Image (cartoon, rainbow, N blue to C red; front, side):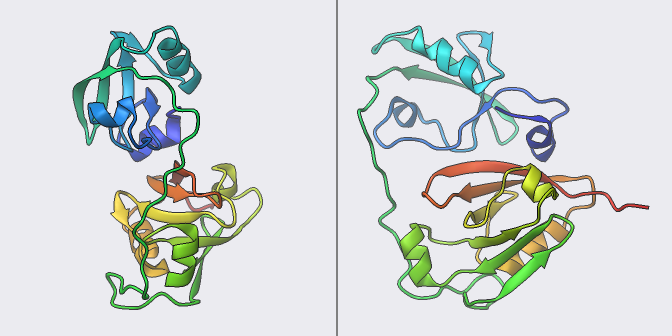
Length: 214
């Protein structure tokens, strides 16, 4: 469900729609051309603003039915017709691409044990070596090492072990990459992060840069 902070990160005036966090391989969504990061605004002309509302709306249909979605993607509204399919019993999808060597990031440094504290967010992150990327099934990203209780990161449900793979639609290769994205925004702005949790599940987290006190 898109909340106020997510809406702010996307440059919207109000919260609306349901954010697509992941697409199953071989699914109806994939066949229709839906993408991670799309926001579903309506189904067959009916607005949907809660994830469970979207779920119940689709559940009233049957495999073979065609539903029309209005989707927001990169600031544009597009129409997608989806032919529903049987729900798979179990699907495990893992990327086959993993780095065998430490990659250079945009700053020219290699992944190492370097850590960085982002005190205003209550977040401590660290670079991750190729061996850990392979274990976590990610090609890039920095790992959350610590989340301060009652901080902005804590309130947005970031957890130690999460891997931040993108920030503001930019791939993150090092803690410096993440710092640069954050420093390019001002207090009060919100940033959308793409996360992989410790189980490998993708999700989006919007985080707001706190305004300075005093």
